[in-house]
Image 1 (cartoon, rainbow, N blue to C red):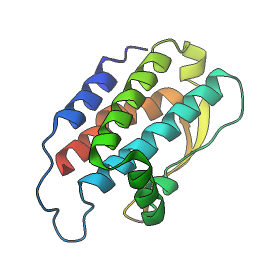
Image 2: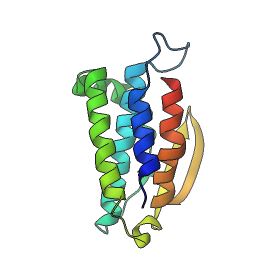
Image 3: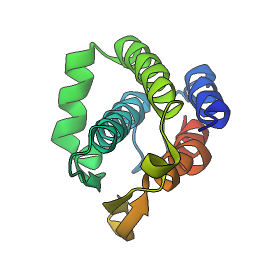
Length: 146
């Protein structure tokens, strides 16, 4: 898999200047970064599971849970730690995705993806489609939020 778009999406997110104050009802910078870190971790986990031949699912609900977001912010030590974590996760994900076979990229994974309480996906997705969604929608969307 060519990981250029995924790498560029991570680079753009990490280069984005955070806004001073989020609009009412939206996440602040740390919450956005914690969410991205959790999504990245889940994606890495799914890639590793597929590559190792184990059963996996892809569910983004934990990455939206307020307690989990606050916990990850605390564990990472705030914005600086989250940015370091996301950089490392992006590098790891690109390295792993770059060596996946076509069979692995076409492996279907049961997926449940929510956004603001609305179900966007509740069906199997190929691992390649999950990775493309991170590069083409998830990361650019949060880059704009910052």
